[in-house]
Amino acid sequence: PARDKYLDTWKALEKLYADGRVRAIGVSNFQPSHLRRVLDEGSVVLAVNQIELSPYLVQQELRAFHADHGIATEAWSPLAKGGDLLGEQAVADIATAHGRTPAQVVLRWHLQLGNVVIPKSVTPSRVAENFDVFGFTLTDAEVAALSALDRGLRTGPDPDTFDLA
Ligand SMILES: NC(=O)c1ccc[n+]([C@@H]2O[C@H](COP(=O)([O-])OP(=O)(O)OC[C@H]3O[C@@H](n4cnc5c(N)ncnc54)[C@H](OP(=O)(O)O)[C@@H]3O)[C@@H](O)[C@H]2O)c1
Image 1 (spheres, rainbow, N blue to C red):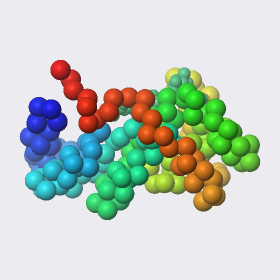
Image 2: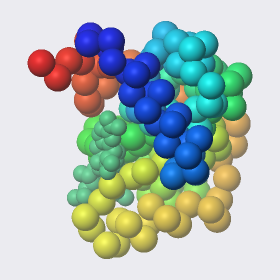
Image 3: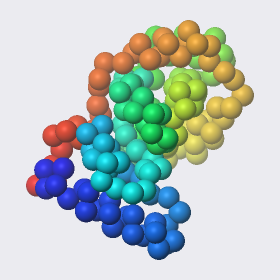
């Protein structure tokens, strides 16, 4: 955004889409103001916005914006990089109640909010664990308890201040 290039870049993606060379186009780390500009001045609806999102960073405003405009929300660092979040008491209590792991509970929270999730692991047993999240359902109260962990905590750069320079 600091270089004011993202609309030009988006229009190049729109050309690829119009030419049939890609089936869908989307963005990453766009804030509502960036999305509004692309929606106002572009001609193709965004398929997805990939943003940092976890129970520590619930991203209520962006998720609502996406829902209003038919944009999929994709969560990067969905486990908040596997750090303190997985040791939270609220996460542990819910994991115990369902006989699941903390990571599975967090991934289930994402899915029940409607998020696309892309957890990363180099550990085969964790990759398998992270896929195995379709055999249980959190209650509304459990989803709310996990959302209550929100503290606006980013593990990566803030898109409003990030600059490559
Ligand atoms: N668009 C962007 O700007 C952006 C920025 C950052 C990341 N991303 C994307 O987001 C993806 C995931 O993000 P991320 O890697 O930052 O964070 P993450 O998926 O939230 O966390 C990854 C960490 O959690 C650990 N972990 C994974 N599964 C676990 C489990 N079941 N139990 C305990 N620990 C577990 C991993 O350890 P091990 O690997 O040692 O198992 C790794 O240290 C990346 O692959 C990347 O593509 C996008």
